[in-house]
Image (cartoon, rainbow over all chains, first blue to last red):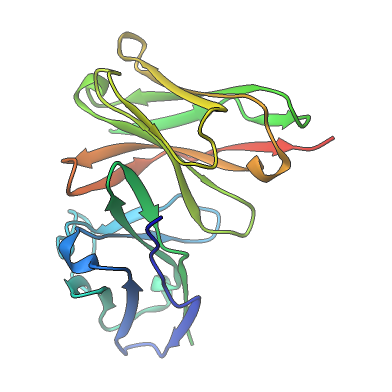
Length: 106
Length: 121
């Protein structure tokens, strides 16, 4: 079965750029979406179709994908960006999520 | 506004059954695929099932195949998840979400608030 791999955790200083990676075989040939989940809340999509941002999502969020890796980039990171982030892609007729990355803003 | 509200969760013994419901409002349910996703306590997201807009096709994760059944009633603006032969490892918060996009490029938006299922003796 298809797997997506994310680093379990990462930390970033306020104002710096955070880059969260998601790896999977030929992931660049698929479309990746990213979700943000804050404690006690439901996930919210922040990037879809690799690099598109839904209305209402800060311009500080951007996405890219190439080869076996998709990347979610958060620029000028703020304390409110502290959350779990999950990548998601398609595998034939099923859906796959990455294991999630806990982003700490320290 | 677009909203999804899950219900039907609770405490059930191993081997038991439960039926979850997801009420949709603010959009035409029949225009969209719908999906169920769960999250075990302290764990990540796990996709478990989706259903096409006309109910013609359903798909399941291997972990629930043969035990869970997804269905929908567009006239009642509702999506359901019938869960049978429940196991301790099915304990999770179950989310309903709207599938947006195509079959090759899609995302889930919005998500409901979730309903908690606990399987324990």
